[in-house]
Image (tube, rainbow, N blue to C red; front, top):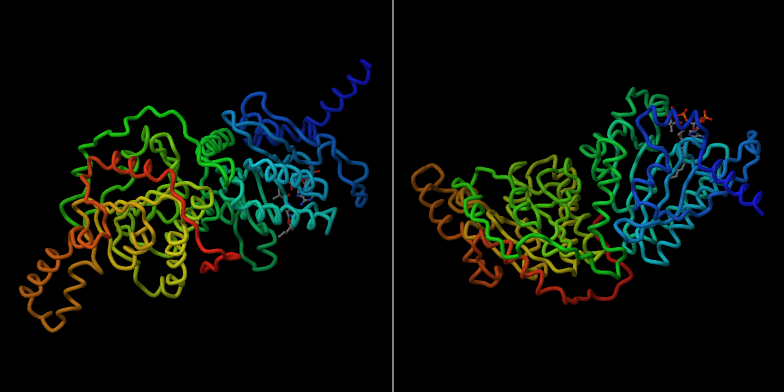
Length: 510
Ligand code: HXC
């Protein structure tokens, strides 16, 4: 009996060593943790329950029958994050470069199926050279099985991908279908084909970092939602995000104890808006002043910075925030901002997370670059996302809400539940100068006359009261009391129930 127990321990010990001491050392030398060390950091201490530790591949080509490491390059199982259940897979780069074989895929599929059945998030720690080359189509089939599950799980359980090494081919398409992708700076890459293939096919010379590093994907491509300094920080931030999310689409977002006064008055907000309409101010200041304990988890902080997206807590409950940022492009909506915010709004709606929208938008960014790029279609994504969302929606217009952008930003007409405006709000078809130049084109030569017309237009429309008279604004509120008003609004919406008409699915302008 003792021998049998000993054998189990020996087998476990071997499995835990993955690709062996030398490769583990090489992994550490690159500043990367091993698959198991990452799981230890991600989950609550001692909570990890492993599946399939002894699964080995079945390939016999290229001499593979002689190398059959237990676990086959991926560690899978479940555990808890601050007591809440999550499923996890962590690819082991020390075993065939974390490449995905048929059996490696089956291990991932098993935990994804269990996550769906039991209603818990899936966190993938990706460190993989893609399809296992020795297995050919069997590994491609394995990827497609994972992809199919990513698609079925979308909108049912949160799926989070952390890119923690060089990820190529199929190793990037599975993350691409998950809700959030985070990268580690300087040690993770994502590309469909690496720099060598790029050079062969297109003659383009590019480094891995330029092609698919964290900076590329958080600033240029928007493939990734955030990047962190190292493995430890990335895993700690994923824990922080999990704390904000519901476990599945049938649960409400978690509520946790909060240490901030709901009715907290912030007098400094009364002077947040500068005297000149063209002077920017930092919308993040407002977000931090509204949030419980000033805690804000930002999504896509470095991309389309003219719009801010992320999560806060109000009265301990998660709320998604979408806010125009006047310090970047004057807060205009453009293609990138519309896509970024639309995806965020749809995530929130899929997982019953209420949405707070803070509006200061002079309109859509004009110009050929935007029109040729399809701003009509991309802008429509955000309009569509807000209009179809059935979660509680509270909107505060702080300053400008002009033109189509007024409609788009969770207006009353798109089923906004509470639409507040500060006294500094300006709600109109366009800014006063542009409006008078169109309405009084014949008088353009007379500067004084035009200045007078502009003042008249400002007096009439550069305020929230015309919209308030029509009931499009429910209440004009004092900036200093915004937190209290917004918290009370969301509290009153906890029982909200709205159903969209039955359909197979909508046809959002992709
Ligand atoms: C089998 C692989 C592998 C793979 C790496 N290895 N990728 N084994 N299949 N796909 C092995 C290496 O042979 C090596 O084994 C070990 O992993 C470490 O790899 P290195 O190349 O030494 O490491 P590094 O220099 O850090 O480079 C990592 C890498 C590179 C950038 C990932 O290995 C690479 O380019 N791999 C191939 C990527 C690729 O083209 N994959 C197929 C994509 S197609 P030893 O024994 O020496 O330690 C695909 C199709 C799906 O995925 C498409 C679905 C839409």
